[in-house]
Amino acid sequence: MPGNTFTANFTCNIPQSAVTEGSPGSYTVTDPVRSSMYGHGLFGDAGEVHTTDVRTLGDDRGVMTCATDFIGMADPSPASARPPVRLPCRAR
Image (tube, rainbow, N blue to C red; front, side, top):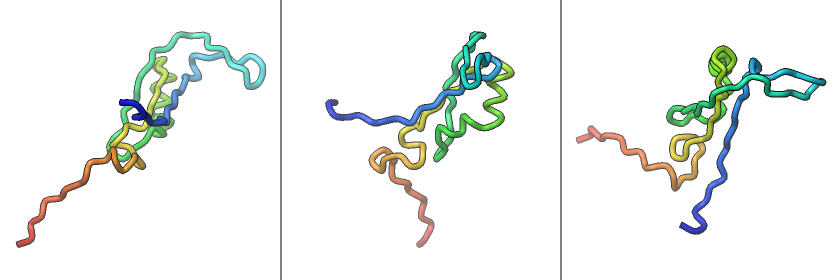
């Protein structure tokens, strides 16, 4: 649909085990890595890819971990992307 666009938050971590620092602040990728899309849970966000456990996975296994905020599952998603929450009512 025309005009149906969304600017996405997106991030990737290249593991330190895959790069070599030349001069300070200048890095060269020296070892190949596999890519992986990290999936956060309900109301999580792409920032979860920066946790120690996920970074350790990248360094230990040669995995570049990437993440994005999944529309409708991340907070804050646009209200139009979130379905209404219906809780069961037990009142009589």
